[in-house]
Length: 371
Image 1: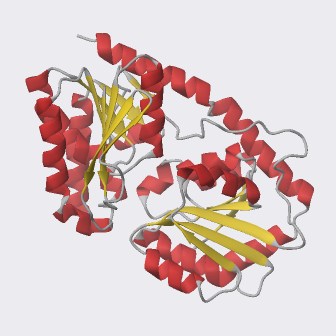
Image 2: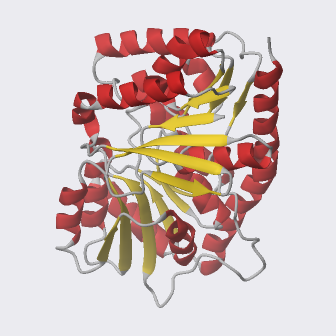
């Protein structure tokens, strides 16, 4: 089985491990944008091959995208696979083009619906991307979604025969016992955490958040990487209560989350993808039993509101952000802990890792035996 992804992806790695545990021989091909990782590596029965091709983030990456697509195509043509799982539209194109020549089945991992994620501000480009992705999704042998709402994005009047939602939940979440990992304001200082990427749509929200914490008894920790890393790091360095960590190893994400009081999800509700898809970070917060500060009008915000998992705010307005932070600081330890525990209970019930793994195995098995 073969996975292709434009950058190292925890979600892809989780699926690769499940496939390997199910008896598949697994190969993962990644685009190493840093150019610093091992070109060939093995983890158990999973073989990693990486293209060390340095590239900026954002629209500028399109300039070198043809090199990545050519690299993927050569591997698909030279190696025999039974199942190929491309992540997102750019990887799906070569897989479907080469499928008939090599006779493999395509399991499409639609982590992002491109027309709503990257082309939402360009109506003509968005229409073209939507038409292309909807058509190619229907041509796939199986579909793995990041959230059920994506079925509306692909315009399916009824779900494909073989599909599932692979929520990107932590597969190694620790059990939550009474008195453990409960959120609390320690010593009067509220600890906020953001871990993620720094695309343009999130930069303004993070800058507003940093400004809103000014002179408040709040420690804000920001970690991640992306297009606007320098702008975030520079502003963070001007505030004594903001800690900027840059990119952190995946193994440090959950420990940082467990040490925080509130997990911040500053997604822009104007982007259709954020309005319809739950991101990785909300599940990490739920797994760690942490309250969540989310943007109104997003899928994450709707879940927080429906199940009372934290607080909603407007990251585009500094004054509203500050009012929300002051409201959180008035909450009792018991209130914050209860919000966090609701989130963990919801994850264990509706987003259980074992159930997700079982459904994913079933999708692979059906794709393997389908005519």
